[in-house]
Image (cartoon, rainbow, N blue to C red; front, side, top):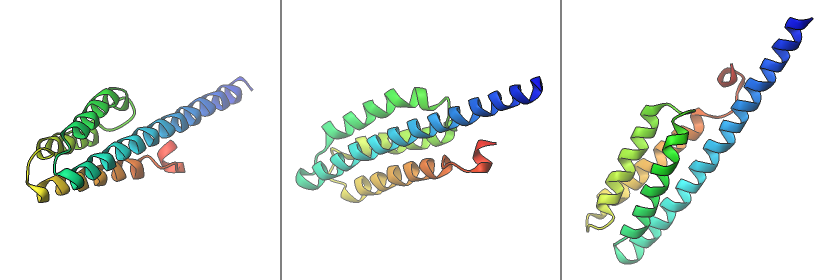
Length: 124
């Protein structure tokens, strides 16, 4: 009977930890996308979104440390690279490159959210 109780407690801990990390990852992804949308809107208006890109970069750098506990480092590095390139092109007149990297950030964020969806396989 002790083993069953221990197994149930362990199962509850695993599931609650996974759900907590899922909620945290989704919150960070949504906030990142909101900051990215502000950056894109600013660039569309006056072809310069340096301030918003800097805010996005600072936010991501702050969040990546805690995300690295629950997310593959390769995915975090891909997003960081795309945000860094976006930051560079946010103050240039290279529209195509700015929009290309903004789409790259969106794509990487979408992949991160898809990889952390709750399923039986992902929990166990």
